[in-house]
Amino acid sequence: MMPAIEAQERLARIADLQLGSGLMDRDDARSRLLELQERAAGPQGRRAKAADASAVAAMGIGVRGPASSSGCEAQPEAEPVGETRNASSSEATSDVGQSDG
Image 1: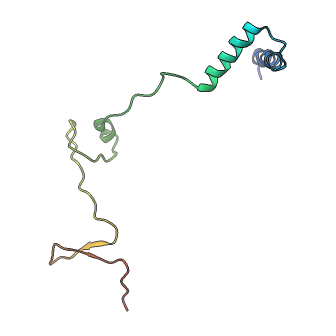
Image 2: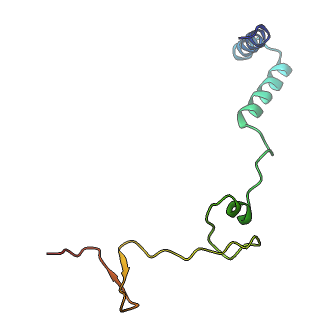
Image 3: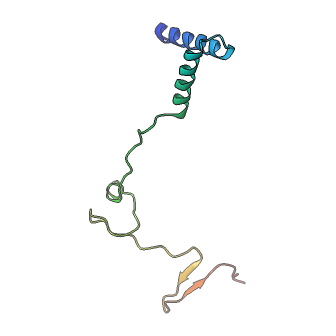
């Protein structure tokens, strides 16, 4: 590690030990705890913008729903698994649970 980073980490460990053992000044301890809690919570207000349907479709990912402004059309829904269409009839028949013999 670089010497500056090592020194910063050592100072942080010393401050943590002082905080944990109760040797740190009350105001310093309170501000140190607040700082640690904020860091533990993670970044606030810095979220990536959600992609809209046209941006997702432009990346080549299929989008269901009404046609978007980019001219992409909605894909038709697939038939449920186990359902087949008979060529002579528009009724669905189920293959599930049937044996050939």
